[in-house]
Image (cartoon, rainbow, N blue to C red; front, side, top):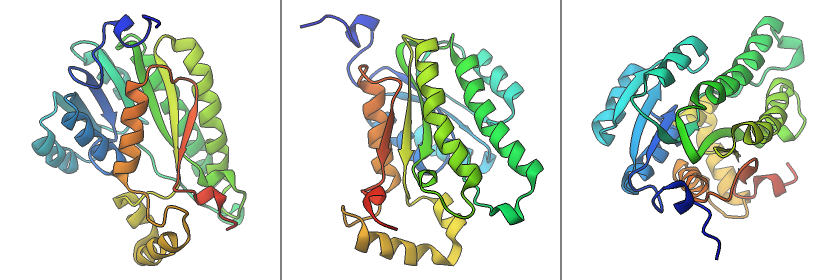
Length: 252
């Protein structure tokens, strides 16, 4: 058997003794991943935009530290990584929300800013964390699968959906032996999904329960489990991992 792998980087199996930075860690997928990391023996550093939600998450999880800022503020992001007292093992980025705007209603300035902010924030995380993540650790970005199917209002999100896996694959080469991966999620039943759908959320849940091959709705815990698997399996880099309950298999 090869002696290379997690042990070769001086890392313990699983997440025991490891530190995970969760950008977008105060709610939804980020919060559920933080819970799983803590249950697996790891420590967390939580970043979120909303100070109240961040404080609530901190009371539950007892993180090493917290920071309240928007990941698109790249100067603040740089300072955050510079001020980390030591190295970390993994960084998960869940921040951001999808935008669905038909071309006829599109504000080009807003569209330009959204594309620039999302891609620049991804590059900024990679750039400013590169001396902080231990060898064999992970940068893990949450993307989506919905933008793969053309449709009215999907222009911006489709461009970002296509860009993130390509960006991650290139970063995996530039940042090696740090690993870079993407989780592409379909519908996940989070507070963000509820806020986007409003009073249509219950109907969407029922539709998915009836039509998805898994016959249930994907939740934050499902994505968190995949995230922790990618963190702990150090053979994985430069790839995109779908989790959508079979949603892409459906004809509509």
